[in-house]
Image: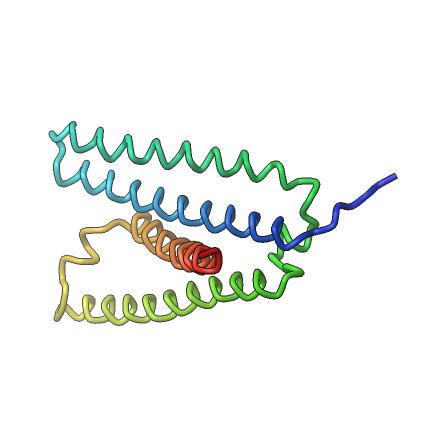
Length: 165
């Protein structure tokens, strides 16, 4: 006999907090990886700086693993709608999740057109001639993904923290 546990707002809030923390950690991990690549190219002989950035990246990677391991305890408690589609039964948790999506959409819808305009001006050779030539396409994607993940996770953590106070 299959029994489903009832989703309570506390379980949903804990799950959303965990997802927001994971999103923020992934964003910081992408930024750390880009900084490490930048340090390697700009300061090739600076091993102490590489060790500091690498250690920070390792700590973030371990934090990501711990968050994913904590996510396993929700396997029996969260239904498929909540875990994959982020459809919550509690109105406030659903509102906070939607606000996170809205913030990330707004940030990326402002950032990407600005970058397209800068790339157009760069092709014409008028402004920022070295900006787009100094960064690889992969690093550009990682930095944009980091901004996207941070703009989703951090507002959710802030709103849930504000609600607890």
